[in-house]
Amino acid sequence: MSKRTADAAGDGPLKDRDRPEKMDVDDATKDMGEFEDEFEDEFESEDEILEAGVDGRPDVEREAEEKDAMEVDQGTFIVGRNKLEAGQTLAPDPTTYEMFHSLSTPWPCLSFDVLKDGLGDNRKTYPATMYTVAGTQAETARTGENQLMVMKFSGLSRMNKGDGDESSDDEDDDDDEDADPILESKTIPLKSTTNRVRATQLPSQEAGRPGTTLTATMSESSDVYIHDITPHLDSFDTPGSTVTAQQNKPLSTIRAHKAEGYAVDWSSTVPGKLLTGDNDGLIYVTSRSDGGGFQTDNRPFQGHTGSVEELQWSPSEASVFASASSDGTVRVWDVRSKARKPAITMQVSQHDVNVMSWSRQTSHLLATGADDGTWAVWDLRQWKTSSDSPQPLASFDYHKEQVTSVEWHPTDDSIVAVAAGDNTVTLWDLAVELDDEEAKGGAGVPTDVPPQLLFVHYLKDVKEVHWHPQITGSLVATGEEFSVFRTISV
Image (tube, rainbow, N blue to C red; front, top):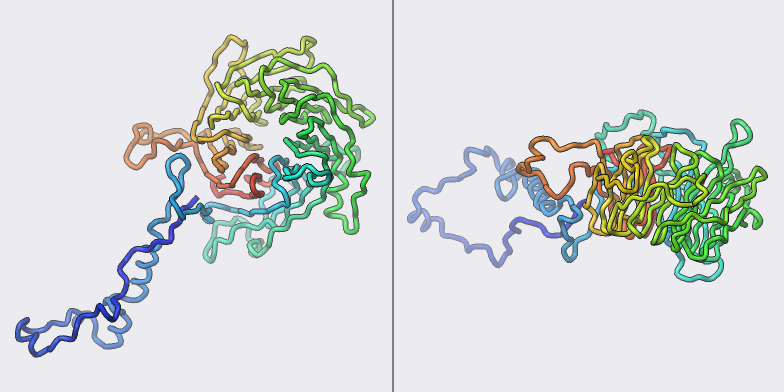
């Protein structure tokens, strides 16, 4: 980020009342001797003197210096090192973004999920299109004020770098920068605000057709709503298509929880299998039947002494999941256990563990984010018994406010995105190591900025950040508004 001030350096021109009085040249030369023209050898004609300007330099040279003086106060704002002064604001440096768009919704959407689509994987062309689902946080609790929003973002163009930009690998996208972003939405009325929403896609029964897209919404009322949003997604790209009131109704409502919660996750290995956790520390498993209905096991998994803040199914083992809690622990469970107790309990923080992410590429890596601003990476192979006290593979206390979201890159197990209460999204490369000069704290090497920190993105009140699984290196974050961006560093 850049910080900007409006101050300019340099002397201004003389005012009329400040100009010296005219001298009598004859008298002056008697006292000063022979008068020498300092420009006599440099300029041969009056035209050249006029072109040079009042201070003897070409106008272009002088204007360039004045421009530099105006920009002398611009610099990089580093969270934890710099403070904004009165009148200063943060502005993104456009040269660091491949793509950057801000999109607003009627109410803040503090939880969302990115939906996989049928437009292809590893997309790099512009303008880009993506689909998301989000739950609102309306100021009033009146019926209909809060909604589940199914959204289509289109016209997401690359940043306009100006003439002479040769960084693009695509030769056929010369007009990519001219597109305007468009947000289309279909809404489903909800009875209360959304604490967390997650989506899954069931496999299609017909070859060549997209599967059914389901969402699970953890609400402030403690109910969990499961919706089929496939008709809403189809309506974006089918002219004349409408969504009926019946299609807005939930397929199922889970009423097992007696307290509200924030933890929910769909299994990536067992279609339609859902985990939900609440502030009482209880975790329930809901399964989808062959007939398409949902059944919740009324025997909860319990063991946490605080609220369940995050749940994640193992990306490789169908019966295993992990939970993170305000009691500072992460626990690993097996749904086949009759005792309904955790197989492993690990104290990972003295503070609330708010969020967690299980690497899809390397299934023994788990990232956690805590209330003190620290986030860490753990090797689950070291968590063999609850009596062990392994150290994290990496730990960073760069953020000074609570970590609100953490997520591994979908295809690179060294890249992690983190969102925090200091209004920033940070990108990290765990593969970066200190060289000899940096390790010794050489001149010009900042000691309070980890070398693994790749990028800092500012978003007021940011809550969640997610990578797009099909648009290479692109992220979506939500806070006061939605940010859709891709940096040139990832």
